[in-house]
Image (cartoon, rainbow, N blue to C red; front, side):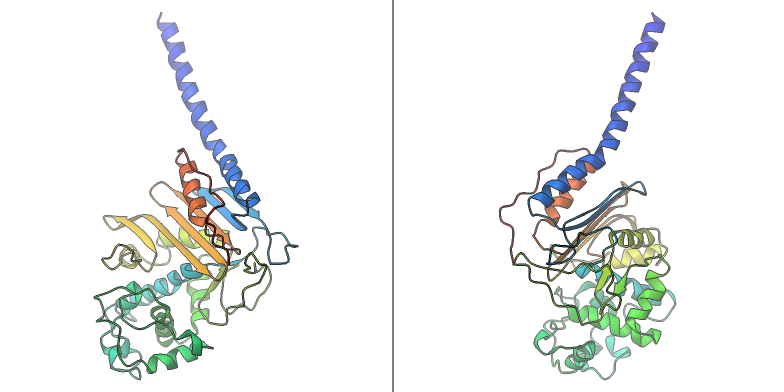
Length: 351
């Protein structure tokens, strides 16, 4: 009788382990089915990478590198990641803070006394949390980063008292870059390459404007009109693999320490506000989740890192369809062995 019980017990254990292994090995095929569906229905043109427990379990490309629809994408192609690039200037400021070069409560006038009196009220932390009150860039008159700084000199008053409201705009980000250049004595592009890209072995990553045009995915809309090149310094073109390397470096505290990472994850107390890291969640100052999306012209990007459950999802597209959140949500569900909804073609925003 005991022998029979033992056999039954062994059978159920083997059944459980077999089903668990099958479930894990079936994940890439489920993701592949989702991505093929999305591609065939015109919902996604780009590259996707999924990592689980530190291992890349899915890495594939769908669609074309430009509007001609001749050259097919491969994982080697680089995409503009839009607002995700703002994390690099945020990390750089924390690196300089850790070296004793600045304090997050420093006023902007400390570095640029030539700016108007409002610079006496705005802190670096305001720039990181988009609470500076500085009006947005006057895009109609901007042709270079120098123009941006000259335009800042012409601003008379702030839109609101610093720290009292939230306004997500690019003047905050460009001022971060100017401060980094002022303190480091090198260009922002050079700083990021030396202190972020190189330590993380991100060989494909390049700050705009792009010099190396090899393996650049060109943004295009549904009328097959390509985006104009980005002439300003600060955007980033990168592969899915190198964006994963950055996430791993950041979360493992290779670039900045635990306290600095926690500071960057803080945001203004408003429901739709973002931190310098996009969306970040912490438990006892330890990051458990981190996600950020970005858009630049027809480029569409998202990275989701569940640090607690050890998975990463990266989607980079050069043909905006407004479906990247639905697709990434479906991948999250697959990784958690839950039911998911296929993205649908209706309500796609065509440009």
